[in-house]
Image (cartoon, rainbow, N blue to C red; front, side):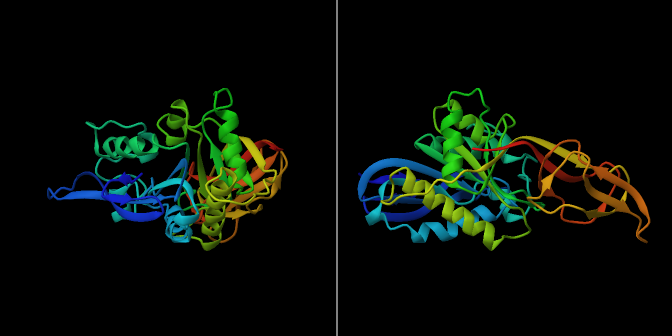
Length: 319
Protein backbone atom coordinates (compact mmCIF):
# COMPACT_ATOMS: atom_id res chain seq x y z
CA UNK A 1 0.00 0.00 0.00
CA UNK A 2 1.38 3.41 -0.97
CA UNK A 3 2.00 5.80 1.94
CA UNK A 4 1.77 9.54 1.44
CA UNK A 5 2.97 12.44 3.58
CA UNK A 6 2.58 15.85 1.98
CA UNK A 7 4.08 15.58 -1.49
CA UNK A 8 6.14 12.50 -0.53
CA UNK A 9 4.67 9.20 -1.70
CA UNK A 10 6.28 5.77 -1.39
CA UNK A 11 5.06 2.34 -2.41
CA UNK A 12 6.14 -0.69 -0.34
CA UNK A 13 9.92 -1.04 -0.49
CA UNK A 14 10.42 2.61 -1.47
CA UNK A 15 11.49 5.90 0.08
CA UNK A 16 10.45 9.38 -1.00
CA UNK A 17 10.94 12.93 0.22
CA UNK A 18 8.83 16.03 -0.24
CA UNK A 19 7.12 18.90 1.56
CA UNK A 20 4.17 19.19 3.92
CA UNK A 21 2.53 22.55 3.20
CA UNK A 22 1.54 24.37 6.40
CA UNK A 23 0.98 28.01 5.45
CA UNK A 24 2.32 31.09 3.74
CA UNK A 25 5.17 33.48 4.47
CA UNK A 26 4.74 37.26 4.73
CA UNK A 27 5.09 37.74 0.98
CA UNK A 28 2.22 35.35 0.35
CA UNK A 29 4.39 32.46 -0.84
CA UNK A 30 3.47 29.00 0.42
CA UNK A 31 5.99 27.08 2.48
CA UNK A 32 6.28 23.48 3.56
CA UNK A 33 8.17 21.38 6.05
CA UNK A 34 10.68 18.83 4.65
CA UNK A 35 9.28 15.32 5.05
CA UNK A 36 10.26 11.76 4.23
CA UNK A 37 8.37 8.49 3.93
CA UNK A 38 10.18 5.18 4.28
CA UNK A 39 7.68 2.49 3.36
CA UNK A 40 8.85 -0.99 4.27
CA UNK A 41 8.53 -3.90 1.89
CA UNK A 42 6.65 -5.80 4.61
CA UNK A 43 3.71 -4.58 6.73
CA UNK A 44 4.25 -3.54 10.32
CA UNK A 45 4.06 -0.67 12.77
CA UNK A 46 4.55 3.02 12.06
CA UNK A 47 7.23 5.19 13.67
CA UNK A 48 6.99 9.00 13.58
CA UNK A 49 10.18 11.05 13.96
CA UNK A 50 10.42 14.83 14.03
CA UNK A 51 13.24 17.30 14.65
CA UNK A 52 13.92 21.04 15.06
CA UNK A 53 10.82 21.86 17.04
CA UNK A 54 13.08 24.59 18.40
CA UNK A 55 14.85 26.43 15.60
CA UNK A 56 18.36 26.43 17.10
CA UNK A 57 18.34 22.76 18.20
CA UNK A 58 20.04 21.07 15.27
CA UNK A 59 21.33 17.75 16.62
CA UNK A 60 17.99 16.14 15.79
CA UNK A 61 18.32 17.31 12.20
CA UNK A 62 21.79 15.78 12.13
CA UNK A 63 20.24 12.49 13.25
CA UNK A 64 17.60 12.66 10.51
CA UNK A 65 20.23 13.52 7.91
CA UNK A 66 22.19 10.41 8.83
CA UNK A 67 19.62 7.76 9.69
CA UNK A 68 17.22 8.21 6.73
CA UNK A 69 19.81 7.22 4.07
CA UNK A 70 20.87 4.24 6.20
CA UNK A 71 17.43 2.63 6.29
CA UNK A 72 16.86 0.11 3.51
CA UNK A 73 13.10 -0.04 2.87
CA UNK A 74 13.54 -3.50 1.36
CA UNK A 75 14.60 -4.72 4.81
CA UNK A 76 11.98 -2.74 6.73
CA UNK A 77 8.70 -3.99 8.18
CA UNK A 78 6.30 -1.11 8.61
CA UNK A 79 6.65 2.60 7.91
CA UNK A 80 8.72 5.54 9.10
CA UNK A 81 7.27 9.04 8.78
CA UNK A 82 9.74 11.90 9.24
CA UNK A 83 9.36 15.67 9.54
CA UNK A 84 12.92 16.94 9.37
CA UNK A 85 12.34 20.59 10.36
CA UNK A 86 9.21 21.44 12.36
CA UNK A 87 9.85 25.06 13.36
CA UNK A 88 10.35 26.39 9.83
CA UNK A 89 10.43 30.10 10.65
CA UNK A 90 12.79 29.79 13.63
CA UNK A 91 15.15 27.53 11.68
CA UNK A 92 15.48 30.12 8.90
CA UNK A 93 16.80 32.73 11.35
CA UNK A 94 18.58 30.32 13.76
CA UNK A 95 16.37 31.26 16.70
CA UNK A 96 14.77 29.11 19.39
CA UNK A 97 11.20 30.41 19.13
CA UNK A 98 9.01 30.97 16.10
CA UNK A 99 9.64 34.67 15.30
CA UNK A 100 6.25 35.05 13.59
CA UNK A 101 4.30 34.65 16.85
CA UNK A 102 7.13 34.54 19.44
CA UNK A 103 6.08 31.03 20.48
CA UNK A 104 8.02 28.00 21.66
CA UNK A 105 6.72 25.33 19.32
CA UNK A 106 6.85 22.52 21.87
CA UNK A 107 4.23 24.30 23.96
CA UNK A 108 1.66 24.44 21.14
CA UNK A 109 0.54 20.78 20.83
CA UNK A 110 -1.90 19.42 19.80
CA UNK A 111 -2.21 22.66 17.88
CA UNK A 112 -5.05 24.48 16.15
CA UNK A 113 -5.42 24.39 12.38
CA UNK A 114 -7.10 27.83 12.49
CA UNK A 115 -4.75 29.34 15.08
CA UNK A 116 -1.40 31.12 15.15
CA UNK A 117 1.56 30.16 12.99
CA UNK A 118 2.95 27.80 15.64
CA UNK A 119 -0.47 26.31 16.41
CA UNK A 120 -1.04 25.57 12.72
CA UNK A 121 2.34 23.88 12.34
CA UNK A 122 1.71 21.92 15.55
CA UNK A 123 -1.72 20.83 14.28
CA UNK A 124 -0.30 19.68 10.94
CA UNK A 125 2.54 17.69 12.49
CA UNK A 126 0.30 16.30 15.25
CA UNK A 127 -2.04 14.95 12.59
CA UNK A 128 0.90 13.11 11.04
CA UNK A 129 2.08 11.86 14.43
CA UNK A 130 -1.36 10.40 15.15
CA UNK A 131 -0.79 7.93 12.31
CA UNK A 132 2.05 6.31 14.27
CA UNK A 133 2.42 3.60 16.91
CA UNK A 134 5.54 5.20 18.42
CA UNK A 135 6.84 8.79 18.41
CA UNK A 136 10.36 10.21 18.76
CA UNK A 137 10.52 14.01 19.10
CA UNK A 138 14.21 14.86 18.73
CA UNK A 139 15.48 17.82 20.79
CA UNK A 140 18.65 19.06 22.44
CA UNK A 141 19.35 21.22 25.49
CA UNK A 142 19.19 24.41 23.43
CA UNK A 143 22.67 25.93 23.04
CA UNK A 144 23.71 25.21 26.64
CA UNK A 145 25.80 22.17 27.59
CA UNK A 146 23.84 19.08 28.61
CA UNK A 147 24.19 15.33 28.91
CA UNK A 148 22.52 13.13 26.27
CA UNK A 149 19.19 11.98 27.68
CA UNK A 150 15.67 10.86 26.81
CA UNK A 151 12.70 12.55 28.45
CA UNK A 152 9.49 10.86 29.53
CA UNK A 153 7.00 13.70 29.92
CA UNK A 154 3.58 12.06 30.41
CA UNK A 155 3.88 11.78 34.22
CA UNK A 156 4.15 8.68 36.40
CA UNK A 157 0.40 8.32 36.86
CA UNK A 158 -0.32 8.28 33.14
CA UNK A 159 -1.65 5.01 31.74
CA UNK A 160 1.17 4.95 29.15
CA UNK A 161 3.97 5.84 31.56
CA UNK A 162 5.40 2.31 31.49
CA UNK A 163 5.30 2.20 27.69
CA UNK A 164 7.01 5.60 27.39
CA UNK A 165 9.63 4.61 29.94
CA UNK A 166 10.29 1.40 28.03
CA UNK A 167 10.71 3.39 24.79
CA UNK A 168 13.23 5.66 26.52
CA UNK A 169 15.13 2.65 27.84
CA UNK A 170 15.25 1.06 24.39
CA UNK A 171 16.46 4.33 22.82
CA UNK A 172 19.38 4.00 25.22
CA UNK A 173 21.04 7.41 25.67
CA UNK A 174 22.19 6.29 29.10
CA UNK A 175 20.19 8.93 31.00
CA UNK A 176 16.45 9.49 31.37
CA UNK A 177 14.55 12.43 32.85
CA UNK A 178 11.26 10.95 34.04
CA UNK A 179 9.29 14.06 34.96
CA UNK A 180 5.90 15.33 33.84
CA UNK A 181 6.43 18.06 31.28
CA UNK A 182 4.68 21.36 30.61
CA UNK A 183 1.35 21.43 28.87
CA UNK A 184 1.65 21.69 25.09
CA UNK A 185 4.59 19.33 24.65
CA UNK A 186 4.20 16.64 22.00
CA UNK A 187 5.52 14.09 24.50
CA UNK A 188 2.58 14.97 26.76
CA UNK A 189 -0.15 15.38 24.15
CA UNK A 190 0.51 12.21 22.14
CA UNK A 191 0.37 9.74 25.08
CA UNK A 192 -3.07 11.17 25.87
CA UNK A 193 -4.06 9.81 22.44
CA UNK A 194 -2.58 6.40 23.22
CA UNK A 195 0.83 6.70 21.52
CA UNK A 196 4.05 6.10 23.50
CA UNK A 197 6.26 9.16 22.99
CA UNK A 198 9.62 10.42 24.21
CA UNK A 199 11.72 13.46 23.46
CA UNK A 200 15.41 12.57 23.35
CA UNK A 201 17.42 15.63 24.38
CA UNK A 202 20.63 15.03 22.47
CA UNK A 203 23.21 17.06 24.33
CA UNK A 204 23.41 20.80 23.91
CA UNK A 205 25.58 22.86 21.60
CA UNK A 206 25.82 25.62 19.04
CA UNK A 207 25.38 24.02 15.61
CA UNK A 208 25.58 20.28 16.09
CA UNK A 209 27.67 17.75 17.95
CA UNK A 210 28.77 14.57 16.21
CA UNK A 211 28.83 12.43 19.36
CA UNK A 212 25.27 13.39 20.32
CA UNK A 213 24.14 12.78 16.74
CA UNK A 214 25.79 9.36 16.78
CA UNK A 215 23.88 8.45 19.96
CA UNK A 216 20.65 9.64 18.36
CA UNK A 217 21.16 7.56 15.23
CA UNK A 218 22.02 4.53 17.35
CA UNK A 219 18.91 5.17 19.45
CA UNK A 220 16.63 5.20 16.42
CA UNK A 221 18.07 1.93 15.15
CA UNK A 222 17.64 0.47 18.65
CA UNK A 223 13.95 1.37 18.45
CA UNK A 224 13.57 0.05 14.91
CA UNK A 225 15.14 -3.25 15.87
CA UNK A 226 13.49 -3.76 19.25
CA UNK A 227 9.98 -3.00 17.99
CA UNK A 228 10.27 -5.24 14.93
CA UNK A 229 10.81 -2.78 12.08
CA UNK A 230 14.19 -4.39 11.42
CA UNK A 231 15.43 -7.88 12.11
CA UNK A 232 17.91 -8.41 14.92
CA UNK A 233 18.21 -8.05 18.66
CA UNK A 234 18.92 -5.15 20.99
CA UNK A 235 20.69 -5.42 24.32
CA UNK A 236 18.52 -3.10 26.41
CA UNK A 237 20.73 -1.75 29.16
CA UNK A 238 19.78 -0.17 32.46
CA UNK A 239 19.53 3.61 32.34
CA UNK A 240 20.33 6.25 34.94
CA UNK A 241 17.02 7.95 35.70
CA UNK A 242 16.30 11.27 37.39
CA UNK A 243 12.74 12.20 38.34
CA UNK A 244 13.55 15.64 39.71
CA UNK A 245 15.33 18.67 38.29
CA UNK A 246 16.81 21.52 40.34
CA UNK A 247 17.93 24.70 38.63
CA UNK A 248 20.48 27.13 40.02
CA UNK A 249 20.89 30.79 39.22
CA UNK A 250 23.63 33.31 39.97
CA UNK A 251 23.25 35.20 43.26
CA UNK A 252 25.68 37.83 41.94
CA UNK A 253 26.94 39.03 38.60
CA UNK A 254 30.39 38.10 37.36
CA UNK A 255 32.22 35.13 35.85
CA UNK A 256 31.24 31.52 36.55
CA UNK A 257 33.72 28.71 37.27
CA UNK A 258 32.21 25.22 37.48
CA UNK A 259 33.37 22.72 40.07
CA UNK A 260 31.45 19.82 38.49
CA UNK A 261 31.45 18.31 34.99
CA UNK A 262 28.41 17.00 33.13
CA UNK A 263 27.41 13.58 34.48
CA UNK A 264 29.30 13.99 37.77
CA UNK A 265 27.70 12.72 40.95
CA UNK A 266 26.63 15.54 43.25
CA UNK A 267 26.13 15.38 47.00
CA UNK A 268 24.10 17.89 48.96
CA UNK A 269 26.51 20.63 50.03
CA UNK A 270 28.98 20.09 47.19
CA UNK A 271 30.14 23.24 45.45
CA UNK A 272 28.58 23.48 42.00
CA UNK A 273 30.13 26.74 40.84
CA UNK A 274 31.71 29.96 42.02
CA UNK A 275 31.25 33.53 40.81
CA UNK A 276 34.21 35.91 40.68
CA UNK A 277 34.99 39.41 39.51
CA UNK A 278 36.94 39.89 36.27
CA UNK A 279 40.06 39.91 38.49
CA UNK A 280 39.34 36.55 40.11
CA UNK A 281 38.05 37.99 43.38
CA UNK A 282 35.45 35.61 44.89
CA UNK A 283 31.89 36.89 45.08
CA UNK A 284 29.76 33.79 45.64
CA UNK A 285 29.96 30.02 46.05
CA UNK A 286 26.87 27.98 45.20
CA UNK A 287 26.33 24.53 46.69
CA UNK A 288 23.89 21.73 45.84
CA UNK A 289 20.66 21.46 47.77
CA UNK A 290 20.25 17.74 47.05
CA UNK A 291 22.09 14.63 45.92
CA UNK A 292 21.98 14.00 42.20
CA UNK A 293 23.79 14.33 38.87
CA UNK A 294 25.24 17.44 37.25
CA UNK A 295 22.88 17.57 34.28
CA UNK A 296 23.11 20.87 32.42
CA UNK A 297 25.17 24.07 32.46
CA UNK A 298 25.26 27.40 30.68
CA UNK A 299 27.83 27.77 27.93
CA UNK A 300 29.06 31.33 28.48
CA UNK A 301 30.92 32.24 31.68
CA UNK A 302 29.47 35.72 32.22
CA UNK A 303 26.27 36.01 34.26
CA UNK A 304 24.02 38.71 35.64
CA UNK A 305 22.34 38.47 39.02
CA UNK A 306 19.58 35.84 38.90
CA UNK A 307 20.61 34.43 35.51
CA UNK A 308 20.42 30.67 34.93
CA UNK A 309 23.69 28.80 35.53
CA UNK A 310 23.13 25.03 35.86
CA UNK A 311 20.79 22.15 36.70
CA UNK A 312 21.07 19.01 38.81
CA UNK A 313 19.00 15.89 38.16
CA UNK A 314 17.66 14.55 41.47
CA UNK A 315 15.90 11.45 42.80
CA UNK A 316 18.36 9.38 40.78
CA UNK A 317 18.09 5.61 40.37
CA UNK A 318 18.85 2.82 37.86
CA UNK A 319 16.07 1.02 36.05
